[in-house]
Amino acid sequence: QLRGVSAAVAAVAGELRASAELSAYDESSLRGTLRYLQLSVERSSDTVQLTLVANAPSLAADPALAQFALRLWRLRAPRWHSIWVNLNPTSVNNILSYEPDAWQLLHARDPRGLGGGAGDGDRDAGRDGCLV
Image (cartoon, rainbow, N blue to C red; front, side, top):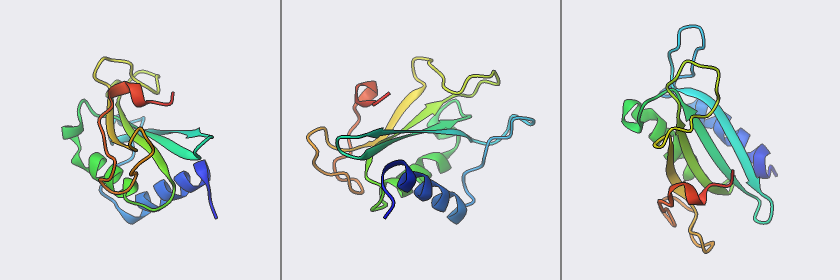
């Protein structure tokens, strides 16, 4: 049984293969949405925080991004802590953007450990719920 980061990578890879909606970022053409993935594990609970780094100025710029995150959130494994998007539409050589509105929380477990299923325990914690 896969746990933690291994389960998260397998889940993301599986969802990317299953759906052609979300495009990968191409450095040479500066096109595509998904630039990077960042995964962090909260060891005490073995839950995974996923950050999808997007070449997009807003979530509305590519609805496939939020749909992809929702499909991941609904999976039984891995146990997600939260799923974030970091909006980084720049063409410079930085992975994450630290602009004021760059971080968007899409899904998170209830802070008391309740929920964690599809729509169950979802909250908008702002950046305070971030593991990194």
